[in-house]
Length: 281
Image 1 (cartoon, rainbow, N blue to C red):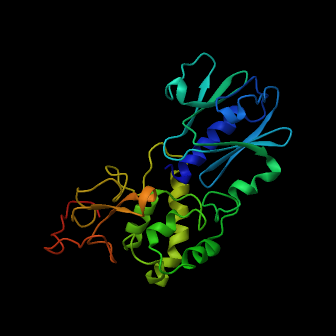
Image 2 (cartoon, rainbow, N blue to C red):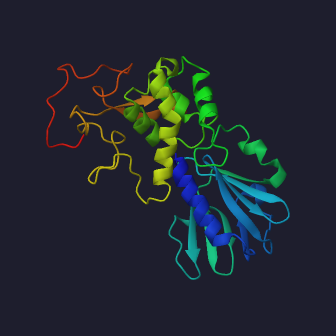
């Protein structure tokens, strides 16, 4: 599922392409809105809210979309070939005189009154990239269920909005704890660092084409997707296991040496490996 910075970038592309312009094309390819025609309405803008996108039109209408796992918005110029996927995956097309926005594989697509936006995003916690960001409230939300594993609490958008599976793993690594550590067991000094650290990571990446959390030229991420390669800090093989139940289970990565706390299986039986002095850490 896309992270908050990815959704922020999608909102910016849509806003820059459509805002302030009248629609010349309005093509909803879902049965519920097959007869809807917004042509002639001016697009007021698109804004992100956590992982949700809200595109507003004159007349008090909002298009609410969510990318989920496979969705995307692509913007094309006049005469440019559409490359986002086959035609049967297109859910909506919004066009102006010089730009066309095409929504592919959008599992959430809802047209509502702008005054009703809170109905679809009002449950979200403070947005890491939004004007409502409140680190104290975000931390209080996380600590409200102290027995809950940290990784699951971070993914719950009701606590704070914008963290996905990649940032979950990276944040836990940077805090030095496993994603299975109960939130209430997180040391107080690290708990206080969590909300501002999460905000810094997303802000640093909202303008980058490739997400980066390490600050290292050769490596973009510390642990996510790296199993069973060596940890960048200690050379212990990075491990992977699913976290969560059923359809909510997500692949989770951690270093059994650098991160303390419970895990699905124990760390390396031979203890901490020798550190490579030439390896970044």
